[in-house]
Length: 297
Image 1 (spheres, one colour):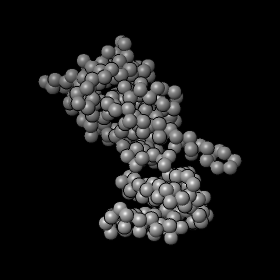
Image 2: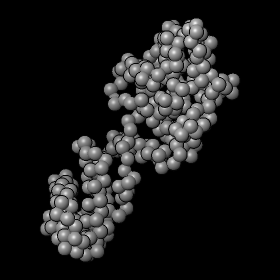
Image 3: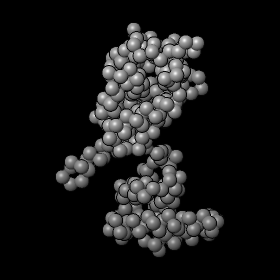
Image 4: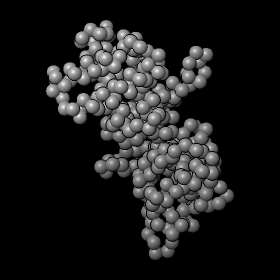
């Protein structure tokens, strides 16, 4: 197969006039690809390659820690190579043509399972008034999918607790209305009625919903510390970011049948392609379940 790689590289050099540096990069990428086919898939002829083999190679690159840019570059090389093989009739079908364009490859964020979210939500001590505040923060974040920055800037004017909605100001000062759900509403009412008055300080005006111990609007950094504190208490080992509850919210909504456009609206995404990353996460979950339970994975 390396002979065909070299023939392809000669074509790029002579017919396409690509630089030596570009040719060298293509050679490295395609030699890794061919070695994977030979060693991992026991494939010795390119006619035997299926598009699933290429997907598996991409996933191995991801597991090896390659950046999204490097994976995209590899895929470009493979797609151009297979296009050449088809045109020159070394293979009958271009199996790489059906693969996603590199611009569609995105980093998939880690998400929590529903059980893991529930474990985190159980951690704050509701007998402690600061625990009530922390539980309200976590519940509202998971119920709404808000960004940490959006949550920290919420004011009492943004809340219609009787109806169960929040007005959220997102990127570009765009407003959206988000329902908060019964459980988040209940703990939020308890926080505003009992805990928040204890946090208010004389002479410190505060319209923010969530306050620090000093009576000031809670910062994004403080919310992030709260999340990490209770993730650790729940003994969850996944890589957690400030957006983890937001990612989990979106994933769980889609898993349970929510329309993609609705989730886009709730998250405040201007472009639905940004929301579509969560459909890829769901596919990865289905693939892992299939691999775990099918008798011939």
